[in-house]
Length: 58
Image (cartoon, rainbow, N blue to C red):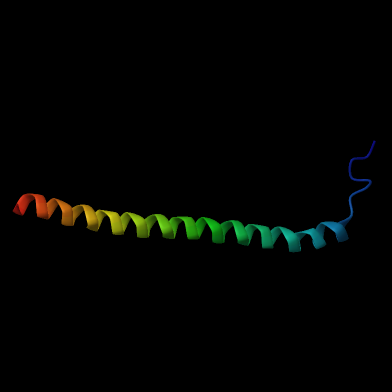
């Protein structure tokens, strides 16, 4: 039994179009998650620092 008997190069090449779009979407979503995490970390660390300053000055 030949495993490459039903392999079609044309179908493989045409499926690459869907693969790169899917990979691009995955990287965009991961980038957005990282960006939101960094922004939230920055915001909440500044908020905590202000709270700490108020407690130290009071």
